[in-house]
Each structure stands twice: as structure tokens, then as C-alpha cells.
Image (cartoon, rainbow, N blue to C red; front, side, top):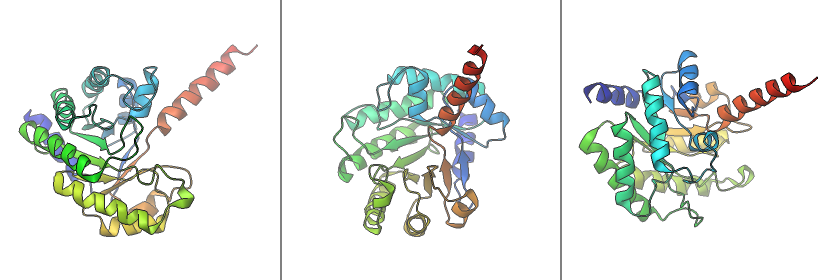
Length: 256
């Protein structure tokens, strides 16, 4: 556990606004080793990719036990800190979230992504509801691994077309960031946001280091650094790229 705590502290220290930690998301032990070999400083799973690699749709349709077993294999395959995508915490009650966090720590994770979308299709959770869930996650983490990094994901931007993103939505995200941070979150993940001006507005006022996800028309990594982003995730893109390369190679090999 002392080694895991050191990794967790190391991972937390990597979140520096203006010096973004780049996470090229992995889905199994093999992809973890490949990304580590490319020079990554840390590893992150992506729920969409892990689910797809195991024959499931995203949205907590992949059983938690399978997700944790997959996480354990990734942790064993690498020397790097590993953070896991726990989606919305796998359970309706806040104590279910605590159990998911405990299970992730037990197999060696140093942090998690934890989103505010209700997987049953009811949109975003109320702030008070999500705060209660984050508090339970924080309490569970503090009991075992105080440096565990809870990356609070909000889907305000992800749930709306990029052309409709506004300053008012930034204000909504900032309200959530404040509440989530006070509940014990360590970072703010705002996937779907790609507008440089709005990213800058968010990073300037967020009480938590900001994580964005690479999407089409995203500013360059250098520009994201200038905008004081602290973390850049690639989400499902690495898996999609790998599967396309595999399919193309198979198609070539199968052609007469």
C-alpha cells in the first residue's frame, strides 16, 4: 500500500494547469504496455473502450466485477499509475459508489473518473445528488488511499452539440465544479468542450484542475497548455484507431 500511495501522490502531482498530463486511454493489459512503451507518464482506462473490447455497450452495461478484473490485469502489466473510469459509480445509492472505489483501490488504481450522468437515461443528476455520491467516494478513498484522485466528470457539454455551447453552460459547469470540489473531488472533467474561448473561461475560474477530451476541431496540445488545461484525455479514440488498423490489415490479408 505504501508503494500505491506513492504512485497516487505522483499521479496527483501531474495535474498542473498549463502543463497538461496527456492520457492516451487504454482498455486492456496489451494496450497498457503499448502506451507505456510509447513514453506515457500514467495510464487511464476508458469505459467505452473497455466495454467494446469485452462485447458490451457503454453505460455500465459491462459488469463491475469484469471491469475490476480487467483493471487488475492492467495494473499488473505496468509500472505506471493507473486511473480507472468508473462511469457513474455502478449503483443508485451513494454507498454503491463507495464500494466501487474500494474495489478499484484493492486492485491498485490511484484514481477514478466519476460522472454525473444517470445511466438509466434521466440526464444529469442534480448537483445535490452527485455531491452526496462524491462524498461517499471520497470517504471510502480516504480510508484506504488518501491521495486517490477523484476526477469529477460533468456531461453538460457532452450532452449538447458543440455549436450550442455557451457562456451560460460554462457557468453551469463552474457551479458543479465548486460543489464537487467541496465534496472531495480533485479534478474537473468536461468532455465535449472544444471551443478555445470557452475552455479558457472554464480553466480561469474553475476551483479544480481542468481535464478536457480530444474531439474533432480540438485546439492543439500547445494551445490547450496556453489555456491552462491540466489534463487531456483521448477517450475512445485510441481503441477506434486500433480497431480500424486491425480491420484494414485483416481486409488486406483476406483479399485475393
